[in-house]
Length: 407
Image 1 (cartoon, rainbow, N blue to C red):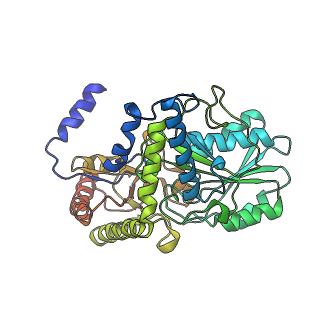
Image 2: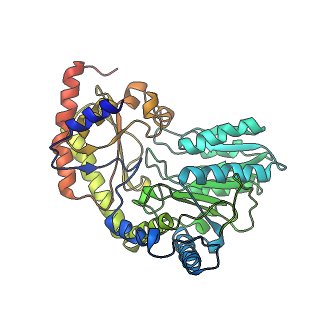
Image 3: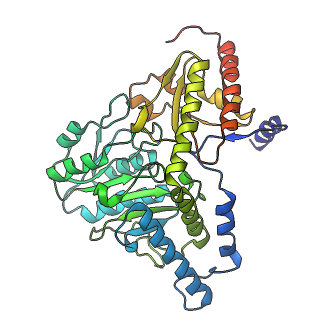
């Protein structure tokens, strides 16, 4: 396997232009974020924030400042409503498992949408081992949840509803505030969680305005370091820890806080929000130029998800018929263009994206999809290079396949 990878990397030698569009899976961390993190490894605040010495006090001060900043960016009322976790995945595990265990005396029903990210979907289903049940709400062909079905699903046994603010694959902006009102009208005791990782830094987000009880975000989704996420838990909501160990500055996640990554996440948040309108406008402009250019150059395409203001400004998901997605990601990689195919979390299983299947795409359409996400760091020259290279790659693959029909 290692030798195969070496051969693949050797094929990439000589690339002169690289364009990273696979921001669903990871991101390039800007130099400003790296520079902000480095001193906290060995120059300052490298101590345990619970200990009574200078490095510990420094770490405590830095972490408290980060709590406050992330709370402000999410619209939380107080900094104690924020918990840092090792990633968005851990944040979602804590949100769902922690609230379910704490609320089990009130009921054992969890409601989610059928297009939730894997780290929500699988956790909710796993709770069946502990006697909980999961109901999935269907979506329409653009990925919007069926609010009537949501209303029907919530009952006296429902303890938790979890619906993402923005779908990670389609960019669909869900009507969270309306959904919360429906849930609370049916059962005021039901808690509402939203995975806001694809909303944070891309659309206006305020947990107080949305009236959600819990929200989770991830660092790398905003060009921060991997290995860091955060959970908002509304003051007064009960939750159980899902891990045990040394308790530091936060009661819901044990262990020594990772000060450098917390600083990196905070710096990435600052960069995302300090010029929020300009940043999101740039993402949208580059995304639209990318999509329009692809549709102008190629036929037999399907645009997945909604268009316009109901879609996250960074997200482009296109099914290219008669062109297998994995083959296209490899072909583009050889040109220095990096995208993902199908579902970012399940592509190595060679299964179609559950999100694309849920909106009615056939397996061939799902397997032929590519997901691209723009960032404020990209340029118009980058997009021009993609539009110059992608049609050639698609036509080459279609030529090898040799099919002219659409199944």
